Length: 265
Image 1 (cartoon, rainbow, N blue to C red):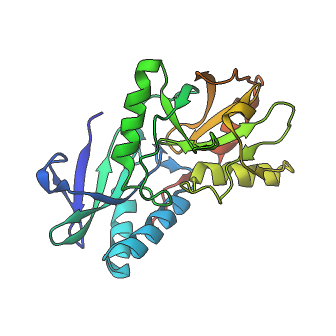
Image 2: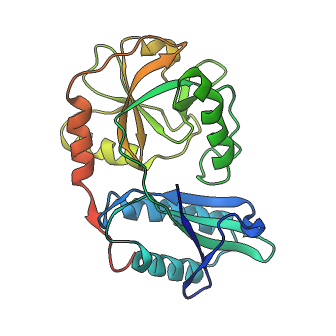
């Protein structure tokens, strides 16, 4: 997937070679799908990014505000994109960057497998663990899986390498999500769908779910890139199910929340 990497000078973005040695360690990152200038929950993505940048880097609030203002002006308004914003470690301190990336095609299904281990060092911050999490996907790919699911030593579900989980346990007409007591990234898509559920009078339960609990369950893999994908299989896991039309209804509701890029963040 071709991309252009821009570095923020304090006033404007300047393109740089995305693979240059000065890239250094990613401290914070966030991404969102942009379709012809429309994006779901952009303010939540920018808020999550900002909170992590201000609490975990030496970037000042004024510099961050200037970056976000320049960003909303730089985002493309036509086409399908998956922009990434990031704070990276450099010898002179943390630096803000923006990656302009085309979005891959839409996908509605996924095959999952247990991740071979949990490499996360910062489970509540998106960014520093991204390369290690991508490696999990590479490790499960030979099994025919396209997403790796992190589990605890007790085989409780945590999250996907690049996704959150929403589960319709067998016999339940409401979804279950992973509780905040289990360290994992606060997913934006999960939060948006939880808000929708509650507005529709559908409870969302946060409780531990083990792999064995998934027998006959419908498992949703959530991300800002694809919205909702249904797990059609769990490699070396229990058989899953799917209620026809449910994912499509909720995916439509998620997409209906897309808003134009604001003139100010």
